[in-house]
Image (cartoon, rainbow, N blue to C red; front, side, top):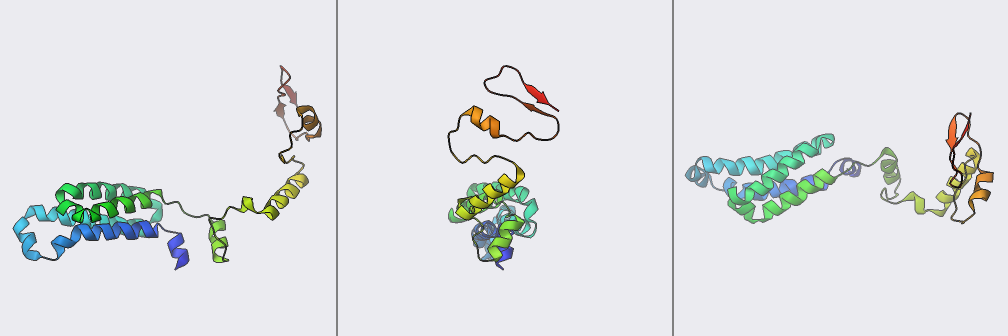
Length: 183
């Protein structure tokens, strides 16, 4: 269940559907109210039902979340004058917040999901780990690349230690006026 929630805009969809329910709730409770309102009562069902449908579409097809989120935002704002003050304002606010969360949601990468399955926090930045930094520097040294470690070495010293890459490249020195092209 955790993997399902991490691969979808779950909380945004839940808040959006709850907002749609608050917009829809006053009209659902009373069939006589719907008959009395006539066609005007249908807009409550269109707005509230549209918000709930947008939440379900975003939950089922998270890669298509942008259009349902925009439509839900429009339905939420339109519910203020058209549907009982937007479900007593609560439905409108929940709809706006939920559709914003759905729109802003980004999926985790496969590496982040695997780390989350192992018990690590996927939002944790691996660059803050000192062991990770040492492994990066060791890997860069094996590749023949220089790792900038924060020392303020002068340009001539750094230029002498820089390996020459294979293939056509253009090397531009800050103190030289022309470019040196090595092939």
